[in-house]
Amino acid sequence: EAGVAQSPRYKIIEKRQSVAFWCNPISGHATLYWYQQILGQGPKLLIQFQNNGVVDDSQLPKDRFSAERLKGVDSTLKIQPAKLEDSAVYLCASSLIGLAGEQFFGPGTRLTVL
Amino acid sequence: KNEVEQSPQNLTAQEGEFITINCSYSVGISALHWLQQHPGGGIVSLFMLSSGKKKHGRLIATINIQEKHSSLHITASHPRDSAVYICAVDGSAGGTSYGKLTFGQGTILTVHP
Image (cartoon, rainbow over the protein chains, first blue to last red):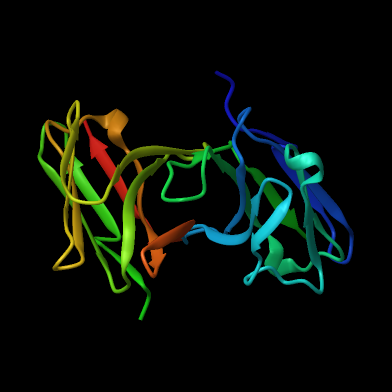
């Protein structure tokens, strides 16, 4: 069974530029999560989708971050414009069901904002 | 105070030693997860538990719901166990979990040969 795929693996941009990350969850997984992990910290949930609907985006900085999950499968996370403090690893995870289900994580995208 | 606290933050051991990592949480939960993260790598789920104890190979996870505390034990540690170990809780609201995880800050484990 293929795991959660993410691209790109690494991205370096300058502040005020835009960037987009892509995630393809495990086939059949209804729930998809985007996390931000700053160096030395645990991941922080940015947004959770159930199929193509948003369940929780309370910690998403909506003035610069946006995410969508068209057709309830792949998802993209965008930052526009990027700030220095956005440098982090962005992790995508999926689970079969959202209710106390095991989450499967992708390899992450390491973003460096200069 | 963070909702999920891990201790220690850093742990160094010699190969073969018995290792314990602790996790305390302050909210009601439906499940607790132990995760492993290697440098430059993604996160792998080790255990998901809501009561009692689970064992997988040299890894053992326990949870005490009343005390809001969990431990991860590694027996006969090996250098390949070197990684960051993260505790995460799946919060509950009225008995229904939405799958939202709150993570501890992680414990950096280094096992020397």
